[in-house]
Image 1 (cartoon, rainbow, N blue to C red):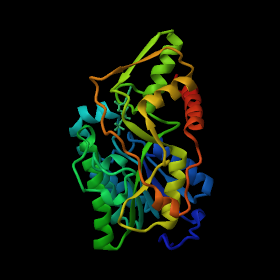
Image 2 (tube, protein in one colour):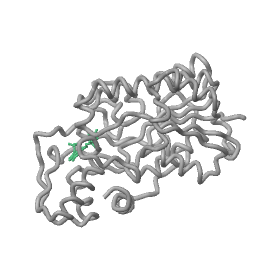
Image 3 (cartoon, helix red, strand yellow):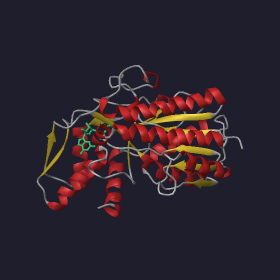
Image 4 (cartoon, rainbow, N blue to C red):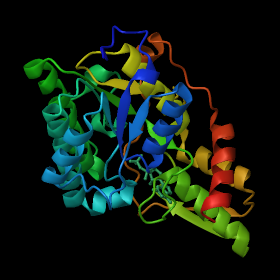
Length: 319
Ligand code: GDP
């Protein structure tokens, strides 16, 4: 079959897709979006069945199924403290996962692959909103540079396969994501699920004060993972370039403002205290999303609606 991007009539019913990381926040949203498109077939293995850091096992699995499309949504991910505390694991595991996956996809002659990165690949002081062309124009934010370096290597590896082997592989850079399936562990999670958990726990226990990290001054952009998943499918239908492409909501807010909104959605009415000894991270990382919007994609889920449904999911599945 033809899976080139100029095939805007791509018929999802005819293709098989391997989603690496299909049980994670992004991978599970991709499966929902693929199923809604009527995809022919999907493949996925949990990490206990297939450890993508194991090169031989990864080759065996992918060469056996020979999917038409591979989506790399598998990664070791975490919030600001996890990233800063475990740089060895973040650099090593992510480098191994993506390299094994891409080498195995090449061996299986997979012509269409989508690699997912992150907005943290851009320089700490990049002009805002951040254009794709600012990649590699300045130093990275220290709290997440191990993860960012692995992802930058992944983008270049995608480009190298395009250049050397003519593969139609692409890279997408999502902003901060949230939604059902997120990680709500307070040590390792990102800020939005951490706020849901902290405010919910305080509400339930009747605690009058919740302490959160940093100064609250940094700004972050949030995108619901179901919007991201639809954006990824649009890219697979319509995008074919070595340059990574940003996917974001186009709107950012102060972490302090996010805290107020999450507290309101959860129903926590106590005091929020800020522990300025904890790191703030990047001052701002709002993505310029003009290129993905020009392909016909726009986000549909507002932050408040997305937060309300994610809190509902948390109540049903986690709390
Ligand atoms: P980042 O976007 O890579 O910096 O990762 P995070 O989502 O972990 O953090 C975003 C911002 O939220 C940083 O300024 C954190 O200091 C701040 N923050 C405040 N409270 C928390 C918390 O409880 N957990 C996390 N992960 N971040 C928090």
